[in-house]
Every structure is written in structure tokens, then in C-alpha cells.
Length: 201
Image (cartoon, rainbow, N blue to C red):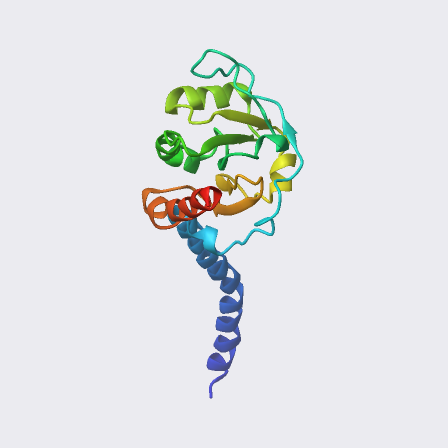
């Protein structure tokens, strides 16, 4: 075996070792992005809060936002969650996937058997108001979480995330990532129907 061949092997090995972390990172990044696109992360990131009461929290309303009656929209607190099935969407104006799911939330808000509320996560008031002004406001109440403390208590990994809280005030379901037409039909709505039906049984 020539000296040149012996020297080229360690050199090739060094290149492989140097490139391996980059290849792994790119592969994981591609999987993560795909999961977010499909909303599939909801099945791979379980929530320890399922079956537990909503965390104790109180969030101020989004200043300057009014409802269809012209009155200021309420903030959010833990004592608001009993009596009706509530869908809680964690969103922000700087979140691109939040824009994608907003039309679906507008449709969901038309249901009279649920209440749809929002947690505005680490956002600027003016930007949040502009977002809702452009895309519509599906929420009957919005709590502002400027430092993300309430989101931590809810076990939020990132925005958007959507929870379903039963009429008993317990978290019944969690969806990580944007709602899409596909995962809304295949996952979210079937779970929501089970929770709504359980309330009436």
C-alpha cells in the first residue's frame, strides 16, 4: 500500500467527521419543518397537563381591541374556563404559521357549542391589533402574555399551539403547530367533537 493512499484515508475520515454534525442538523431541521407544516408535531410532543385543570393565571386584555358589540374585549383568567368547552389558541403577529391558520380559526369561531379564546404571546400591542385587523378576530377574549410566563405554565413549546379545555375546566387536548385543513379534519375536529359530546353526556 502506497504512502499516498495511507495518508488520504485519515484525510477522508476527517472530512466525514467534520460533515456529520451538519448532515444530522439538516436532517433534523427538515423533519421539524415538515412536522410543523403538517401539524404532525401534536402527536409526537405529549402534554403533561392533559386531564389536569388549567393553570392558575390572569392576563390583561389586548388594549384597544373591541368586540362586535363595541365593548372592550375581556382578558383571560383561570376562572373563565368552566361551563363551556373552550378552544385556546396561542398566537403572535410575528408568527407566520399563525397567519396560515387564522382563516380556519375564523370558521371555528362560528360554532355555538364552543368558546374560542386567544393568548397573545410575546407580542407588541400595535402589531397584534394590526394582525387582527387584517385577518379578522375569531376570539371572544384575548389575554396578553408579553413575557411568555403564562405560556410556560400551559406547557407551550412555541406558537401556534391550540388547546381544548373541557367544560369541567380541565385540559383535554393539545395541538402543536398550525392548524391546517388536513389536520383540522383528521385530528383536531374529531377530538373536539369527543370533548363536546362528553360535556353533554
